Amino acid sequence: MIELKNVSKTFIENHSQIEAVKEVNLVIENKDIFGIIGFSGAGKSTLIRCINLLEKPSTGQIMINNLDITALKGKDLREARKKIGMIFQHFNLFPSRTIFENVAYPLGDGSFSKKEIKDRVYNLLHLVGIADKAHSYPSQLSGGQKQRVAIARALATEPSILLCDEATSALDPKTTRSILKLLKELNKKLGLTIVLITHEMEVVREICNRVAIMDKGQLIEEADIFSLFANPKQLLTQSFIKTTSNLHKVEQLIDEGLLPLELGSGEVVVRLTYLRKTVSEPLISKLSKKYCVDFNIIFADIEIIQGSPIGGTVAILSGEEEQFEPVLAALEKENVRVEVIRDGRKFKQTIS
Image 1 (cartoon, rainbow, N blue to C red):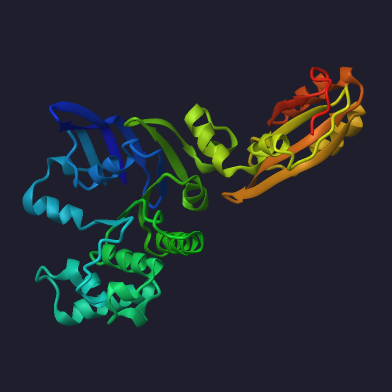
Image 2 (image 1 turned 120 degrees about the vertical axis):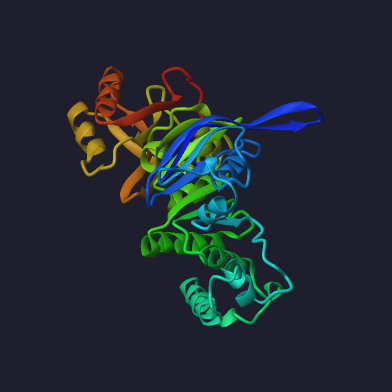
């Protein structure tokens, strides 16, 4: 549905060049929900604005359903843009217009009769769950309701693509979940291709099928959502994952005394992270019996992503020291990442 070919965007500011986007190549499949994540200033908002030519790329091509929209001008470009809806962090509603009038605004080019506009607007308001607010004004709505209006307005021209630029950043967690649920429903009901820009890993985890990590104008990593969370390659991606995973906060809990821990001289604390989509085999139980070692599980964090469990456990491993390496090697062979985070063989003092 969307293909970016060597897309770059350079701004001139105070007589100097700023490369906001650098040589980005990206393919987004039809009806996918694709996330682009990065810290502030990474270039992600500039990139998504290039997709509908709100920002014209300095170089490169934007292909929408095999049509090079960077080569379009005037009426042809306006027609192409009608198939690309967009919502923003701060809603961008007209404060002096009713909710009905806000949603109807994109339809006011003379192509639709009053009845067609009325029918379409009310259908959209029903679709996003705020038909009872048609005659209210934006100031009378909550943040979540305003974003629902913005979504309805973005869908007025029946686009096949919906771009979301930090669309949940101004919302509280409960409202964010409701908007993400709505976007998933629209993806299924309307067959929308959704591109979502965010700096929040929780948002990506909740809704996206694939995700790309952006840093300093470049895409540094791309994967399906399970692979990204299970086995991030880049340091920046790993840091994003750690912000949402309690499994990676266990060391902080130990250091702060919130997870009391005493190690014997021959014990180690290991973090086991599952790297595959199906984890039905009782590995710890099986290996404990086979190698005559004990796993004392002190912490676990498992969640479901794309219908599969992801996460792992933190455990104290005790037994004959010569068995430690074989059992850890056996875990890795079963696609479990093993990290020794405290080692009683090296640190003889008590950790508390």
